[in-house]
Image (cartoon, rainbow, N blue to C red; front, side, top):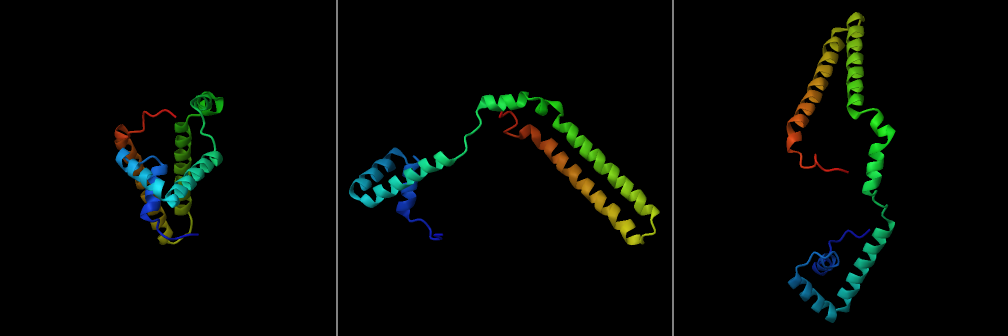
Length: 147
C-alpha cells in the first residue's frame, strides 16, 4: 500500500478527471497536458479507474423498485411503530419482573440498589434520545425525501 501524499499535479489530475476545475483552470491544465505526456497518462489512468469502478458497482434500485417494495405486504403488514412499542413493552416488563425477583431474593443490598439505578439511567437515556429526536424532527432536511 502506498502511504505517500499525492502530489499537486496528481491532485490537479484528479480534479480534472472528476470535472471539478473551473473553465480557466481546465484550459491551463489541458495546455499543460499537451506538453507533458506524464499528466495525460495520469488523467487517462484516472478515467480508466473511474470506468472500472462504475462497472463493478452494484446497480442502484430504480424508483419503481422502491415503490414496489413499499407496496409489498411485508412492508405494510406490521408498521415499524408497532415493533418499537412491542420492544419497549417487553423490555419494561422484563425490567419490572427482574426488579421484583431481585427484591424477593436473598441478594445483598448492593444489587438491590445498583440494578434499579442502571435501569433508571437507561430509561432516562432512552427518553432523552426520543425527546431530542421528536424536537429536531421538524428541522430534519431529509424528512420529505422519498426513497
